[in-house]
Length: 377
Image (cartoon, rainbow, N blue to C red; front, side, top):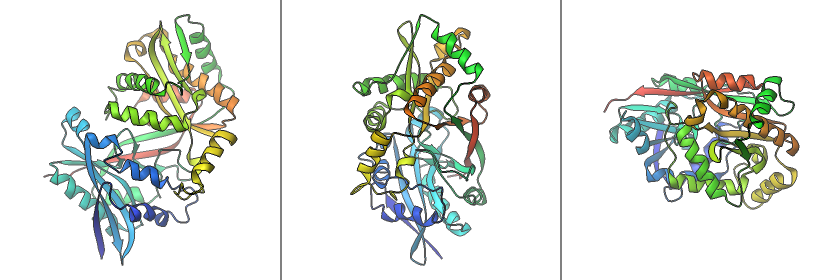
């Protein structure tokens, strides 16, 4: 028999956190996220997502032992934009047990129906702007920072609960080093344009620059499938988080005639730095992270945001802006000793973007799947 317990957001998360280590025991590619970070993300008092969203937590027990977890949440920004009566589930991790998965998902669906939702979508932890999807290909390597990791059976458990594929998302792996001829040519062409200037994000003025980046992001990504704009308070929280981990050399803001037109932001792959901490930052975890980041230096990075304002993206003259930024960041990363990185995520059906990334020498190394189900009322 499976017992399901409900915990409010911001409540006691001990079982929710510890069950991940139990589920992924023996998996050499599992990296437990920092507990303190997850506690903040799931705390309505600390995460600005909850200014426009709400949710709850469920944990599953068999014979008194926690064997699975899930969250259920709604995002009013999404509902206002799409009016599709769709809620989400996330943080879905279980042992290989169909009954455990079915009971967890059923409780999440019940909670969503109670909020008037007619469709469930997931995994999303917590929104489209955070971790999304269940890993369906690429189990042979650890996840990059703020990307999910799963065991091969977990997608099947979702499908057995009546869900069907909605979208796949690609994570691209690239090697830092010598640029191919096509990217070099694009970089040279843009560099020769007198109206185009490029700079790194400034740690001294991080709030200003993050606001600038998000303003471009909200314009550049506004037509993307599932897009939900970042709010002002989410931007402020992002700036605060970036202040600790940002490596300016692997960021770029590009202006045309003095007007900010495009940006790219990569961050160090913190998962490389925390793999031996087992989620604990005290008493020595933070010191280890800072030493590895500031003294040893990161060896991998993740490109988390890239965008070109629509005003410029549709001008043929500036078609190479993305390749230009990639080249700039590749060259800076090479000087820092960064060996490789991930561009993630992209939509499976975004042909133009995927073709551009492929042309720069990157290859898909992980695939994540988002599922959907009609749940009625």
